[in-house]
Image 1: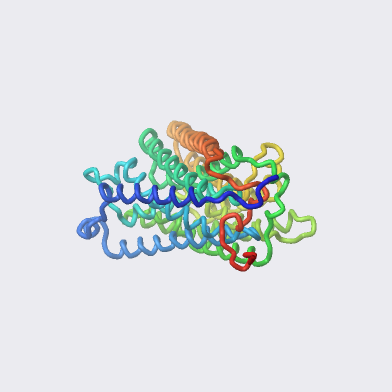
Image 2: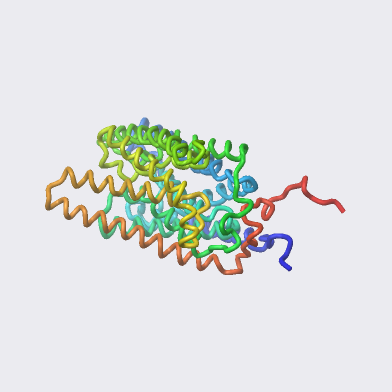
Length: 424
């Protein structure tokens, strides 16, 4: 007979967390320094610093409130969705600061890592990639597995950036905006390796209601409102001011179109002509994902709107038809549909960037650029698939005490509920 309760993580999670934080503190003691004020004054004026801090706050809200509330859409997984989001993001940001400082040379100064507003923003973007990956295994893993998965994902994503910048001399902003493709494919591969037969075709607790749907919609609104800052935060220099404004306007227009399309397609594909809140919560963001990958090549409003149109169309159709087929054909259960929200719109943005660059280049240069773009995508996809598979195999080890199938998507496996305690 199976045990009534999920395995206790008392001997796992505190030990892993204490060990990791101790290592991080020691690394920060020896390698990390805060950027001095005189260095800041030399590089940026006060207005630029204030503006960058405002963008940091926008992204900070997205990471902890946007993704946090969005993860509460399941009826019995609200505590875990929001709580594990804080745990993963807080740990991933610390690790991303270290990984960026060690592997990406422009952030290293005399063997020291100097924290600046830009480095913290980049660390939060790396954490966002880990949160995207978490969406694929949402509700099916315990916090120890998620913590380890986030650290490996951030490591893989930073290594992927290092390869692209070192071997292909990729633009830093472009390489980091591939976070959607990398995170989504990484998470899907982990989910595929950790597949549970007990959740076929759909787990009894994998459902939403009015309250959880409303909280998740609040998270969507946070993400939707601040996404222009998410895409434009790393466009820093004075001579890139016009590009920064173009990115902000283009992102907003793409998001506006994708929100309208998400609602329309959701109603159109429903046999009763009704809208699905889960489709709208996610597909409304797909325009921001797609334009983020293609933003350096988009200079006119109508192109940004077109990208948002097709991104939302593909995302909404994927939610309606693709998710169940993935489970049936590949035994891959993607809880939050990250393949539809992040991977497909991200690849669409890559195609848009390729086509727009080819259209404005000469034939010889266009051919070289096409090969370059294909190599960038192939490296990113291969890295995410290989590292996701390896991570899934590592997390499948019973030592991490995964919960039973019937305890998936259930807060009671990990959280205290005093009103449910039976008094003897």
